[in-house]
Amino acid sequence: MNKAQAGVHTPLIRAANLHKSFFKGKKEIKVLRGVDLTIRRGEMVAITGSSGAGKSTLLHILGTLEPPTSGRVYFGEDQKNLFDLSERGLSEFRNGSLGFIFQFHYLLPEFSALENVMMPALIAGYSRSAATQKAQELLEFVGLKHRLEHRPSELSGGEQQRVSIARAVILRPQLILADELTGNLDSVNRNLIIELLAKLNQATGVSILLATHDLEVAHTMHRVLPMRDGAFVDGKGIS
Image 1 (cartoon, rainbow, N blue to C red):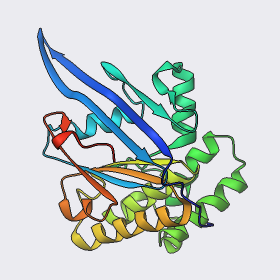
Image 2 (cartoon, helix red, strand yellow):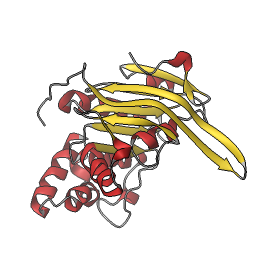
Image 3 (spheres, rainbow, N blue to C red):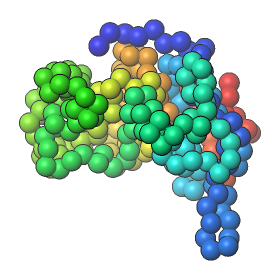
Image 4 (cartoon, helix red, strand yellow):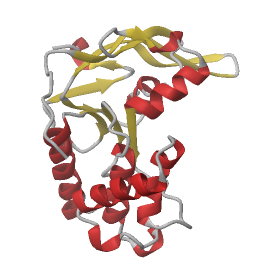
C-alpha cells in the first residue's frame, strides 16, 4: 500500500446538533443532546466515556446505521447531508466510504480468514482473483500471512480482530469507525491492534474514529473527546 497524503485540514465528516432519543413506553430517554463533531481527513480521534454516555449511538449515527432524532451529518468534499440519501444511497455510501470494526468481530465461522476478508470485495463486484490478491496483501499487512486458510475458531482473539480490520479496509474506506475494538483483548494484543491502526493511518491516510473505555488506547489517537450524558465534556468536538 502506498502512503497517502492526508489532507488534515479538510473536514471529512461533520455532525451538527445531533439529538437522539429512544422511548420506553411513554418515557423519552435522551441519548445524544446536541452533539457537534468534526473529523478531518487523516485524523485519528477517540471518544471516551462510561457506558451509557452515548459513544456507540454516536458512531452508529455517523455510520448511518441509524438516523438521528434531529440534526445533520455531512460528509466528503461536497459536505452533503447523508440523511438526505435514499436507503440505497446510504447502503452504497457505507460500502464505499466506511469501514466498521466492533468489539465482537462478526467473522463468518464457516469461512477462512482469507474468505472473510475477500467477502466485501466480492459483494462489491471484484473478480475472485482480484479479491483474493487484495485480501492476501491485507492479511500480510496485518501480520497474518501464515493464517490465510484458518477459520475463526482456529485463531486467537487478537488474530480474529486483525482479520476484521483487514476486512474493514479492503474497499479502501475514507473513515474507519471502531467501537471498543480492544475491549476483549489482553494488553499485548491491544497494543498490536493500536499499532496496526496507526500503521494503516500512516500508510493510507484513512481517518479513524474510535469509541473506547480505555484511556491508554484513547491517548494513542491525535485527539481525545470525553463524553458524558450524551454530550462532549465542555462542548468539545471541534478543533
